[in-house]
Structures are given as structure tokens and as C-alpha cells.
Image 1 (tube, rainbow, N blue to C red):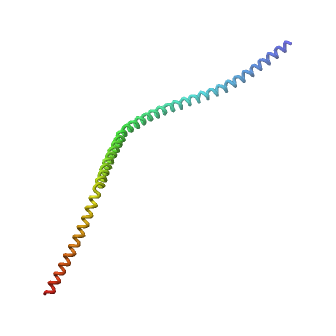
Image 2 (spheres, rainbow, N blue to C red; image 1 turned 45 degrees about the horizontal axis):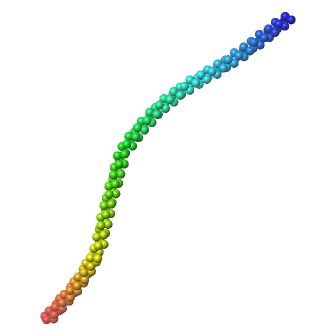
Image 3 (cartoon, one colour; image 1 turned 120 degrees about the horizontal axis):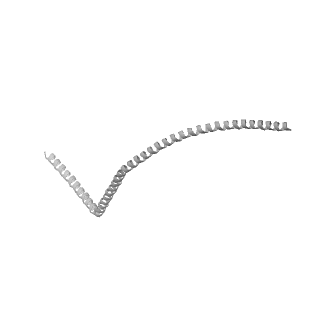
Length: 151
């Protein structure tokens, strides 16, 4: 029975050796995987650093652009103020022209009867002038005919 003890010890030693070989293989695979993970993490760190630097540059450019837009916007405020003042001036001119037009229309309305009367008298005077002119021409013709007959 002693031999059974030796056989059992040999089987246990062989089993332990097989177990150690599998554990070593597993540890090597885990080591390779961890190396790959480490390499990937290092690459990601480099990419994150690059992205961080690019983000910083982009943020700086964005701030410069915002400052430029603010300065230009501030300079345009004067233009808009001038345009508003010009609009106010034009409104004032339009109001003045409307008042003058209303005053002229009112005066024309007040004097329209006098103007109509003046036009009537002018027409009468023109009619009298035309009649006098025609009469004078007739007299001149009649006198010319009389002179011709006397000759």
C-alpha cells in the first residue's frame, strides 16, 4: 500500500505540474493583453493631449473672434445712431412740408372765390378787348375802302 501512496503523490505532482503550466499560459495571455491595453491607453493619452491642445487653440481663436465681433458691433452702434438721427431729421422735414402744404391749401381755399372773381373779370376784359379790336379793324377796313374809292 505504500506504493499507492507513491502513485498518489506522483499523480498529485503531475496534476500540480499541469495546473502550473495552464496558469503560466493564462498569465502570459493576460500579460500580453495588459501590454496591448497599456499601449492603447498610451495612444489614447497622446490623442487626448492633441485634442486638448487643439481645443485650447480653438478656444483662443473663438475668444479672439468674439472680441473682434464685439469691437465691430460697437463701431456699428455709431452708424445706427446716425441713421436714427437721419430718420428723425427726415421725419421733421416731412412734418414741416406737410404743415406748409396744409397752410397753402388753406390760403388757396380762402382766396379761391377772389381768384374765381378775378378770372371772370379777366374773361370779361378779354371779351371787351376782342370786340374793340374787331371793331377797330372793321373801321380801319372801312376807312381803307373809302380811301380807295375816292382815289
